[in-house]
Image (cartoon, rainbow, N blue to C red):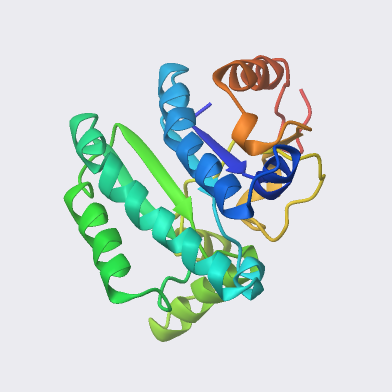
Length: 222
């Protein structure tokens, strides 16, 4: 497996379960992202994408969305030295145009200084939607006067041609929630009841074992 993606669901319910605020739940969820990414590296997966905020999540109360944007900013600053040491290419995919300038600068700096790395990739999907991604790609093709084809549209998605082999959703719900709709055409899907802040390296190992038992045929026959 080259690319695994996570729909990180359950921060709020985890907070309720422990009698904490939603903000505390988001803090715990955010702190788990890099640990899980390192576990992916240990399991020989070189690309991981984490769905932090959907386009629809942006309609939540302003206090919550602003708090999550601050968590994103702080997390990038905290882990950038380690990203550089491990030669990890970092990207934020999604529409970040609304973010405060200081956070956009943090993102731009991290993306720039890690842009040439090829060993590992860490993507954070923020204000991201699969429908937005396709429309944005088509808009780029029209602006460049390129033919709208499978190859060209795929190339100009936020992930380029790097599609996830496996998408894992925590939190119990069984839906994609507008995540990588084009890229997920032949991704394997695994849905877990575990809440994201409780998701661990053991859970990833179990997921990978499950994935290895699947024979992917992409619509073909043996």
